[in-house]
Every structure is written in structure tokens, then in C-alpha cells.
Length: 195
Image 1 (cartoon, rainbow, N blue to C red):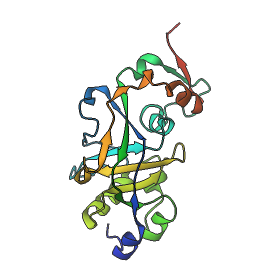
Image 2 (image 1 turned 180 degrees about the vertical axis):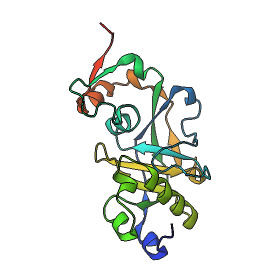
Image 3 (image 1 turned 90 degrees about the vertical axis):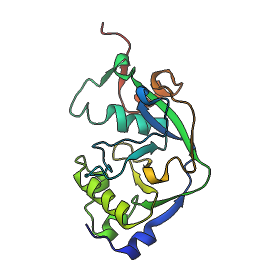
Image 4 (image 1 turned 135 degrees about the vertical axis):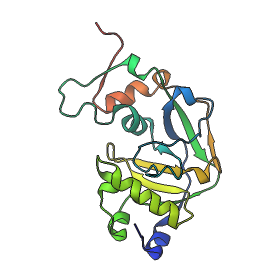
């Protein structure tokens, strides 16, 4: 995928995330800014680079990592507390701005890329776009809107890590004061026991 360099340059913005949230498996608690290969929205389709994701708030990060589409078409939207035991969360801020390609408004249309890249359930187009941005720019990552909450999210390429990002210690997500409210905001009931 070849992207117009002038449009990419125009879409590049200086963005300084403050108190953004990363939900991550507790197994990686020792490295709150650790990146990995995966099959996520903006992961490299060839495993050429790693990424991490940050959400504007806890609700968005919980929606993007734990809830996702699991309750689509279901009347009962119940999440067992035991299902989140292995998840943690960290608060991430930047001490200086990141350079991010902004896909929140007309960026995809201007680039001639399917809006599925950032907004669709399928993630193949997003991976192709991310690979192209990574290869054709020196951007630190992408700025986009969560398709689940409409809030701002950041995909950070490993070449920018840790860079200006600082993270709080990873805490068990279920023990966070805002976790119950975050789940309820997604119209999901948190169930503490199977009975």
C-alpha cells in the first residue's frame, strides 16, 4: 500500500497523552510499556514491528481488550469477575509529544484507505495501513477513535518505546476504583460468583 507522503505529513500531529490507560495481561506487569507481536488492529501483518495500545479512559480500554464483541446480540450481558483476574491496568502519560498520524476524522478518506482500517470489526485493513505508515514515515504511531466507545486511542510503535512514555505500576484491573463503573458504562453486569 503506497500512501501520499504530503497527506501523511499533513495528518501528523504532536500529541501528548496524559493519564491514558493500558489494559494488559498481569503476566506482563513487570513491563507496563512492553510491546508484543499480535493480531490486533494495527499490528504488523509480517511481524516487522510491535505495538502497544492506550485508551483515553478505563472504560475504553476495558471495552477494547476485555469486552470487545463478546456480548453482541445477547440479552444477558454478564461478565464473571473470574474472567478478568488475569488482566491489569496501568496509567500512561508522555513527558513530551508523540508524532502520530491522526485517523480520527478525515484521515482515512484523504489517504484513500477503507474506513474499515480503523472502524471495522475485521482488522486486516488496519494492519496493512499500519505497516504502510510504519514503513513510509517516522511517525511514533497512530491516533484513532475506538469503534466501541468513540473515544480517542493511541497505537504506539515499538520504535517510540519507552521514549517519552512513563507508566504507573500495573494494578489488577478488577481492584481499580473505576472498574465497576467502566463495566456498567458498557451495559455489562459484573458477576462475582456463578450462583
